[in-house]
Image 1 (tube, rainbow, N blue to C red):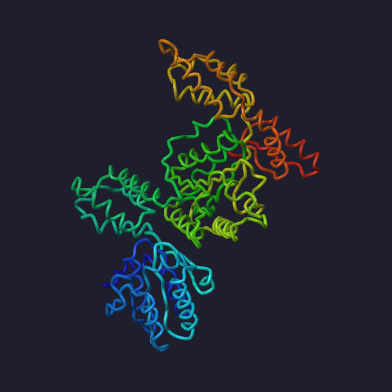
Image 2 (cartoon, rainbow, N blue to C red):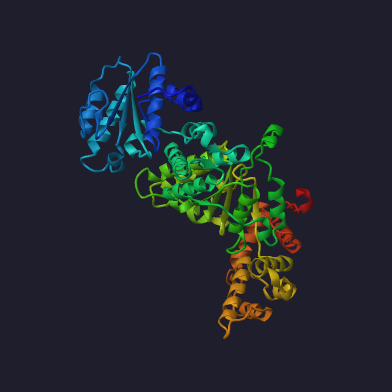
Length: 539
């Protein structure tokens, strides 16, 4: 095993400092989480030689046995017994791999002796210079070891390390990319493991004999595949712009005002990174579309988190998924993290009868702690249909910069929504429609329902013999055939308005009628008057 070069040591200085601290403090058991072993092994070798006194590094895996003598291949209990025979004064770091299958099912009779042995070794190592480090792609922490074990995520490559990998893999005369394009290539590689970066660059080099600007798309496609394999996050490359959103002027102005807030100039000015926003409203009011347009407006990658995927059925798996998600999001920063329908995952989390042995509360606690304390520029866009079921801890200041209430679109906004969709579907026919009439016929329709009414009109016209272009009358016919969700969910909408009035949520639209309605609700409840949004304040 070779000693990494100075650049490697500098890149992982924070990790080295952490490991040095926990070993000198004689923490009994450490779980180092990483999907790739070689860089972690190199770092541990560096650590062992930098400690005072120097440590001997011993590694065990089920195929090769111990690294110094090859003994105990496929024999976990004898391997653990050897650690117990090491003298207390011997300065040794013991690294154990391939324990995840055993830790995943601690209740099995043939696995529990391993748990018992680890617990005993951890207790004994407090009085010695022995350190035990488990190495695996995900942290599996059985309940019996939670008090003994510290979990640390080995970081994915930082920007300096990505740049070092690129220059080490690609010869200088074959790296035909400079300036902004080179920066974009480095950013595109963020969030990938070192092996994947090396593999994709080697693939581009083998295909064309060089690496050029066109290979950025190749890296992005690899990133999509990698993130999809995590089964937690989805990678989006949104095409929607703010012009794709009809209405919601207050929200759009807020987004435009902060479009440069992640720049170096903003950092030098002293601006903190925006944390995120919560978008509240019934289905179809444009919450998901807004998440996509924010990422596009700010020119950031968009990661979508289905919060329900954080929950796994195996002990410790849910907590591991939260760590994996936050590590990946931070590695891709600056980025937008879209948490869709957060109310479905964490609604009623405060109930005493969750039925999952506290897993939901632990996952929720880990998530909101990260939201509060994250230092990397990860902007969170959370959406919720039923905000009343969300715990108060999620809604308090510090988790989000702002909470926006998205009501059903106004007459003017419905006109804009019709125009947006007609422009996208039939740009040459913009003058063929009376948008004021269409909007008047679509009272109480959401943006999604308006879009669907146009599609229904297109199906009706296409089914004509022979097919013809859809018309104003076709859209109106479709509207008359549709019962909007608002007619069914009036109580839910009124409840959301009541909540918006009580919480002081900001209205996403320039809707004076809604503002007056919220003011009336506030006065009836005897609360402090809410502030009316002035769009000019965002300009």
